Image 1 (cartoon, rainbow, N blue to C red):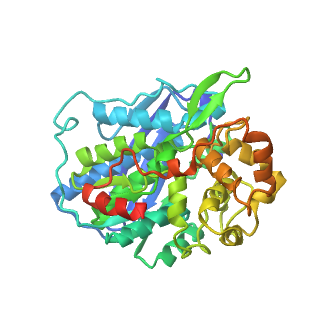
Image 2: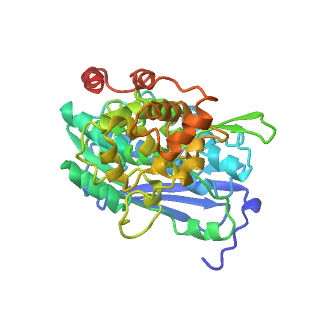
Image 3: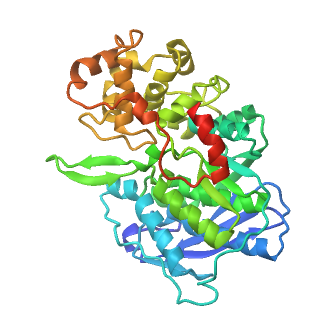
Length: 460
């Protein structure tokens, strides 16, 4: 590695070199390179090997593996964002190219904004001419059993999904990627079967970063979705279930220094409906007809999810939505909530209308709304003199509705952040009624029979 000099501005092409899955070990290798530079190999380790497939399942596995190779490549492509993309060991058709261009352009939206780059219309995947290999008919069903791989992230949303599926009688395996001890503890507390998939980024990527590569946010949920689709085929499960609510489709409204709107940048684009619809449809039509990908919480707002979570205290001592915990390598952090990041700010505010104050303060270890030092963070959530943070937090109207509700409550209205909202912000902003944001509606990919059961449960 020391002899490799990387110049991001001199790179001409990004190469998808090859991918493979060892059925005996369960290890997938995803290989990439820039120009004639050394190869970079990422590994994804799937428990349960050895695996054996009939011909239809083998075809589906190969399709899912290539899809993972293509989507996971975003971590490496972004290091130089060259104009040319090459796919060297297989062909893709125009529909696959279009899906990837959508994921890369939108999923790198925040990355491009923070780095002052314009990627619109720049990213082009090479589609092969139509042939039997690249313009195949719709994928067949491969005989998957009725079982869900439910993604868990350690926060309130996935725990709401896990418990809703449990109440609906859906057999599930709680699944996550990486070595987070916090997520593992939450998964164990569910009492359900678990699946922990290993992912090891190519070490060369860290060397590129030291040598000045472009760096920044990538659509991690898109990568994790592709990993779990392949895992579902290996584990014989017909559903991959995420926990992204409808608020995830709403980005940060960016305003220039002179007050002009310059558009929207969505930190959590791959958690939004546009990604779920495009990716889920592609998987069902091109990988396996009986493999369903959906978010169980899509018709709910963040506030509606918070209300569902507050119904039970089962996970109070185990969950954390604080992203800082997932940036720390090594042992599980002693405190599950940092108390100063946008996620902590928002989750505290979202839960406040739905649980007793003593319980909420007990979860966080402090009252974030009675700390004047948190005012700037809450201003951003309220979209007051600032844009929504680049984090997985709810819409500005949700924060305003929750804060306005607290402003009417004797136990909250004198806390520093709430009192300042009453004094300075409430007269200037519109806050919709809290109840209006708890309504269940909107597009989703939840199987119809399951949704009929869930709708009644969520409305209870």
